[in-house]
Length: 343
Image 1 (tube, rainbow, N blue to C red):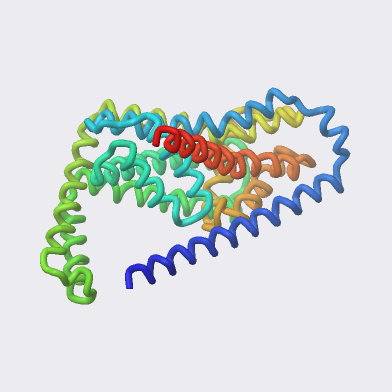
Image 2: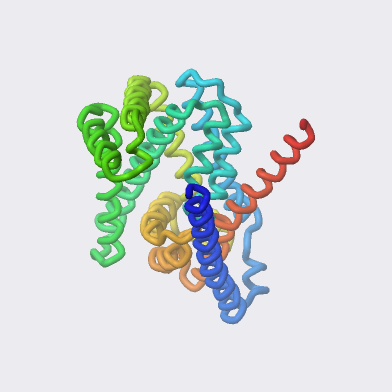
């Protein structure tokens, strides 16, 4: 029974990943054809600045390496026997699977566990990291909205309203996670009621001791969340590193903009606008946010890139999606080869 469900889930994940990659690949291919048909490619190559394009390509490994160091620092701060290489596995290989679809979270959690975290510390550190990610995303997004509406004087359109709605959702999720760390009792009571209901309606949870075993893990998880909350230095480092990690990721269009020989827009402007692009593109749950990423990039970046928006979008998708897949794949092969050599 369990194998059948696992096989069905694995099949769904494969179909979902293939469908998303197919959609994303088709859009990217169409954009490449559009660029070759509508632009003078030779003139475009003459005006490009290779060093800026290299800078754009380096933004992704810098961002993912900071992510790995966050895992390592939080694990060490919690007293776990962390392995730095294992943390890079969690960042690079985990992000590779995230781009493929629903398998990303369980794969990354497993890699965090393999890197030296206990099961419950894996969950609590992952939660605090998710909170930090959402808080920092929200700060960047609020700054971007303020820039658009106040400093840039733009009217409130559907895209801005959509971004504002998502930001409110992010704030709600952050509040829930922080509330769990500060006052866990209401959440624990809610989870107990859910587990008790499941014990009356499912065979798995109906077995003796399952509810109490589950609550034991929940209680340990809440205690560890509280312990991490009490480590002010660790949390300060987490939020500072998350600002750098997302900042590096959001900086890709800035380097591409100058790499295409363009000018007239500041680093801060492109950083904040890119944040709105990422906020909107998250609505689409296909691998790589296929469709949503391209649409939101065109929506917000067209006034900046002008007639170069299509080529800018192609390069951005190569850096922000295909490069992540390539780095994760190469890292996975190298790590597997090293393990095989040791074995």
